[in-house]
Length: 332
Picture: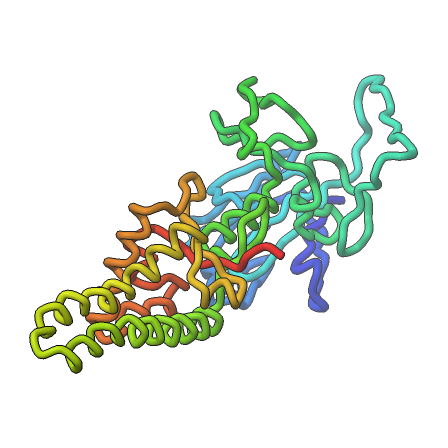
């Protein structure tokens, strides 16, 4: 007999034998299966037996129904299907049936990896998205590829899509779990998947800025000594001293732009193991991005440090946004 297992992974697990008739599901106590959940409609769905198989019908519920992760209004149920109604999972188990015909038996090679559910350790078949015993999602345990042309899922190692026949692109051929982790890394810039360096923390960047501030202050004082000495010791040295005062003023942009272009980091950042790189990773951090970054740096100073406070939003300052750069941890 077919069964409907409600919340198979929870202590409140409940098994219901499905009759060969209609079965109503909803929040109202008059339903055959009552789910006391505010996200479930009073008359949410029905499971109908048409004489051969069971069909699922959504009764135009407010929040809809999901079958194996897809929103559906009507669908035939097969063994191992998982329904989401509100916050509840309903696992459908079909009755055991005889396989018609004389089909060859598939024998798994002794050296191949056993496909077992990570939760209940029951075996599952290739292509299963959910465990047929407990309803646990097992798709992440398999090598699943996405076709770039038709967006079909291809289970197992493959070079071509079995739906449209197109070649599986390298990026689309990664497993779904891997792709999700990579997407999170690209959004947060905090993971090291595929060589993506982790973003620098705000604390390290603050300490590096303090070191650079002391270094630029020392350079300013050093280059200010010659014009100051000329001004004090020569009666007609005011004009010469005024020209020479450009040296300490130019030391500030020369310090940052020079070290960014030559070393990819200022001494303060190098001391703390940080580096400045381009966000897209396809271009070198050269003179033009360095000039743009310095212009944004000056604008951050002009806004009384407001441009630096943007680091608390997504890890990038105003000058990082201008130059499309990011500060990362150097590889050891």
